[in-house]
Length: 147
Image 1 (cartoon, helix red, strand yellow):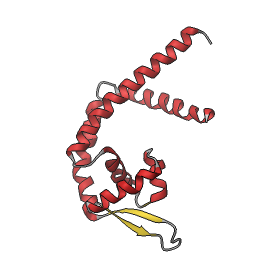
Image 2: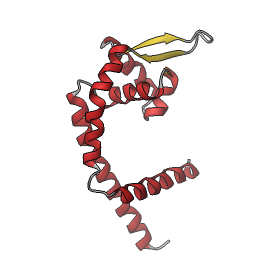
Image 3: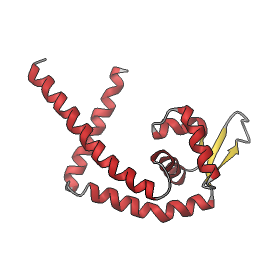
Image 4: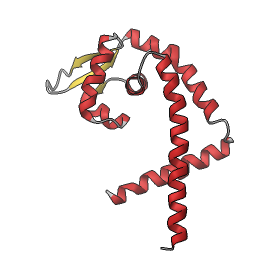
């Protein structure tokens, strides 16, 4: 492996990190205007789009440590946006379920959220977006070889 290859990999890492940070900071600012933090919003979005989720699996789906899920679910439950529901077949499993208040909340804010993300990505053409998606999927999937 040449030093040029290493330098190019380092440059890619820095550019990717900076791009992620720039986009993420903008999205997080918008999410905070909804009265939620980014993790709470991610849980709400997951429940809205994917339905009831076992508490034990939420962390893996939104890239959050499982110990933090209880805290986040507690906060969302206090706000009336979700509720815990015991699994009738296995008492060890508890599901998070979006409430009607939670559904109307997401339906109210999600179109603005999607529009903001689209605006942040508008620097890229549709073809460029498709290429980036393909390339980043390839990069992400290749990482399982190193675990």
